Length: 199
Image (cartoon, rainbow, N blue to C red; front, side):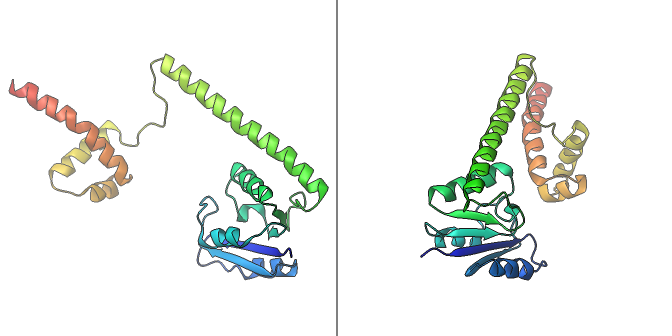
């Protein structure tokens, strides 16, 4: 026997998922799983994992919006594909095109999936091409460090005064990992200077 199973999610503990749950039950959901204070970009949400475990072939997962289950287009396509492979349909209450219980919904999803994958492949290829070009020009890709030479110098002074990494990060307004990396990079240079100075 197939069932309609609902899933609701709110991003913060202060939000109330009651409205979502009521909509899902009104749509026919016999059971609703609800995550509180969980990001849609995190796959291992407790109730989401429980929901996936509960779903059986022939069931329909109903959500208010697709962003309740996935934080990105690619994540959504992957999730729907995995559900499809298990024989589970998905239906969005506010996005009529997302309804794999109908032939039109399945066809539209197939088209969307193809274009989503094409977009991912294009972005990946453009990124690779850009990095290859940068390396050919003698540049290394990636974001510039927030730890400028001035901040690194300040961090070194504060560290010498016995301040903790976290305290230095708070003072400079950066992450503690950024401070740690900057100090690690600066350490060999200090050793070299000390060695040359003593020669």
